Every structure is written in C-alpha cells, then in structure tokens.
Amino acid sequence: MTFEQEWAELRSAAAARGSMRLNSIPAEGGGGGGGADLVVNRDDLGAIGSEAYDLLGRLGKDGDTASASTAAAATALTTGNFVSGAAVKKVHDFWQTHLKTLLDSCAHISNHLDYSKAQAAKDEAKIQGDLTQISVLSEYMK
Image (cartoon, rainbow, N blue to C red; front, side, top):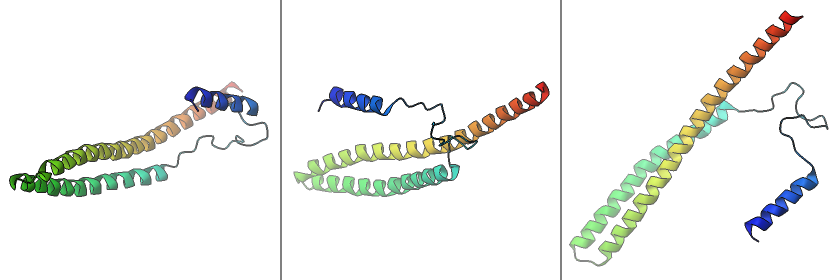
C-alpha cells in the first residue's frame, strides 16, 4: 500500500467518525467541567529525564571503554600484520559513529524533558495569572 492510499483511507475513516474539535467540550459530557484539559505531570517528566541522563552517563562511560579496547585490538592486529586489523578498525569506526548518535539522542531526550518540565510550570503560572486577572476584572465590572 502506498503512502497516498494509506493517507486517503485514514482521512476517510476520520471523516466517517465525524469531525473532531480539540478546542471544545465533547457533547457526551466528557472532559471540561472545570477540570484540566491538558495535564502534564512534572514528576513523570523529571523521572524520565533523569533516567535518560543516567543512561547517557552509563552509555558514555561503557561506550568509551568498548571503543578503547576495540581500538587497541585493531592497533595490535595491524601491528602484528594481521589482515583482520583493518576490519576491526572498521568495526571501531562504525561503533564510534553509532555511539555518538545514541549519546546525542539520550542527551536530546534528557534536555527536552527538562525543558518541557520547566516550560509546563511557566505555562501553568501564566494561565493562572491570566485567569486571576480575568476574575478580578469580572468582579470590577459588576
């Protein structure tokens, strides 16, 4: 199935379910009611970010150890005139490339979750401030 076919099927399935509005309360009475529409649990974000940071540290340390031993093996094999020395060097280079990508990904996840946690707190404070301001103005207008 091509992308265009799959996309057309998904669009028609969504149209069959009816339109979905994200900025309204469902007619069945669900959602709304004074409750929070968007919930961000900062503790969960912090825990996941912390795990990603810990993984980053462990992976960096263990990855460096593996890289150093592979480089040493490649050098020893090449020095001993073994043909496999060049192949082990290629494995080392391949490992380094993928290790860097994985380390960058872990750092990105950790940083993004830390940022999301802080931004969610700022957004919540701003929304509460805006609502307080509206409430004060409403009282004044009475």
